[in-house]
Length: 293
Image (tube, rainbow, N blue to C red):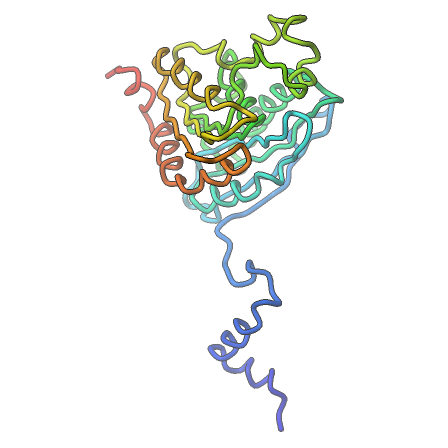
């Protein structure tokens, strides 16, 4: 009798059924075609205080370039975590037509504020410099972060404009600590290197809420109503201040979710998030928000 497997290989349909029956022995990715490309890059120049890498996620369809582009910043209380926690987000965005750069950045205790903000700025600089090589649209740039990463994303947005860094059009910030001025958390003190009583000006400088002004990029904020690590008021007060300054803002409250579960629960609102980003990145969006013709 002839061997069974060679016979199956000559019948593509039956062969596929055979593979599906053995699916438990194979990774799920074996059954799906990727819609994206991934490349690990070094985004810091020679002489930077640390050699930092990032994962660049790109749509598979090169004909749709240039792509709207997002910088992804992981959380971890400024002292832990890495770009791997943004892998799912990077792949999802690339599958939906966005380019995304998930970065590693300098962490406490070896480095303190403003080191990670400078790293994020350098990542934007790298995107601009390499936009032609990867088909990136520097007129449609945003940033997405969670927790400490959301704080850095918001802080990045309120910085003065720099000529060699692309202007942000949209910020997505999940469970963001936006006002550090009264914080007594050890992680905040380690990040800033002093207490608020010792360095009140430093705490104000590192608080996105204290630096809101008209003309900022649009913000989408999401948070868990049961978050005790980063209080809901951090997002709610920030949203109110943005509205008062005339900045477009969308607030998503995730009922019953704590700090950890909110990071996953936002997937239920994915279409809202993607729609908001696409709308705010569209040509003329900022003028329309300001009431200009």
